[in-house]
Image (cartoon, helix red, strand yellow):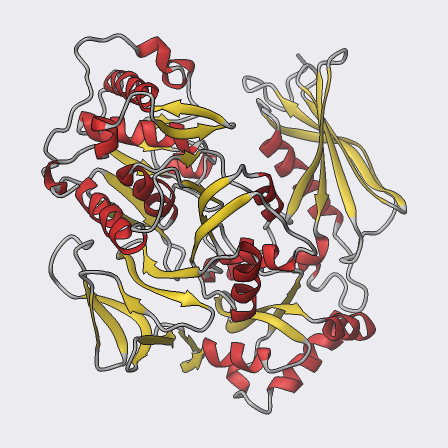
Length: 574
């Protein structure tokens, strides 16, 4: 691995024994021989697209890396999509590759055997081979270009920094997505370049770690997952964890200490971004931040970090908005310089609002954000303690909102007091453990869908119908209750209809457009504290969706939504 400028593929792919294990997929081993054959077949499938750029989206880590390496071998650029949604496809009107596409792209065996396509190690030419997207603090997607050389260098750096003591049979397992930085370099690129086997499936719940087999493992995780691990009443695993890495947001000291005890290993936090890749690391809890090899850090006149790194595209200084101080043994991060909002012409520090909120015994987590609509105002999303939830139940939301503002008025200017509030069971952390400004603002969108979980799916074969039951978290979508009514919030009927239609279109393949409602009945009111289920039943033949909102109290509302054939208008009698 000494010359990354000539290594287009991980060295083990070119030199490892054909019978060596590269991946475990549903516990079945995948050898390097099979890995090589799949890349060759994927190259031929990609060549048929005749496209210099493709969009890559595959939830399977093994399939994902096969497509990515095949792209690089063909000289194509892969744009990574975080999800497969209509809006994302409209934003990226290119050929899409992955598990959701046609069989000719899913089944590599259809493409195998082309003598004109082979596995080799051509020079990289430092061309962009990868495009990632980051929303930053504004929510507007920005393209970040990466070359295979940059990713090779990071893999080598991580092995040199953290891999010297790892035995060759160490398995890498992770909960973070591979479509983003930190998941891509830590969960895939590092073990690929160093020759460690990878467990393809992500673990979604910390309890799944207890089912890992005997042997050494490296865990690539995130603060929300580690927090759930720390909260488990009991935990045991046959696996030996040699290291655990976390990134995305700060890991609370008590969580780090609990996980360190349960996993019997050090917790390593990583600081970086999509633009910079890995910059610093520290051992949690309570450690100072140290530079990665080759990284140079300095402070600008505002006290913000700037850096030079071999993982950046050039030797220029990269400016961050993270404030820091340097001590004798390393760095300490102190906040964000860009977390200042302009409200009615005044500058408001969001960090100061969150600090004031967290000083209240009724609050355990909080995020503040600016909302620029009819008027400029501050909004707050808050997770309450037990005493806070009791007070909310006693006062009701409207009076509790006013009470919270009064509590903050002693430490904040009037302009900085939040005007709108959301009380959540948990903050909207994304897969990387971050809470973005866009996610907080979205909580105040009246058109937003409620958080939900799928609790049941059924197929009624005799009637050729599909049925899905969802559990809706009404208490986490208070925006729809605003003003309806202040002292007795209830879920408006129009919102119930809108949710049923939109969720049905998300879960079923419905052709045609909405054409009307039948048998609509509202039988009981729905309040934010109700535990409600929504059952959707779709008939492709009748082109209708039946929906029922229900709870332990009984049915709250129900109806039938009709959809017209795409070629028909609502007035057609056919």
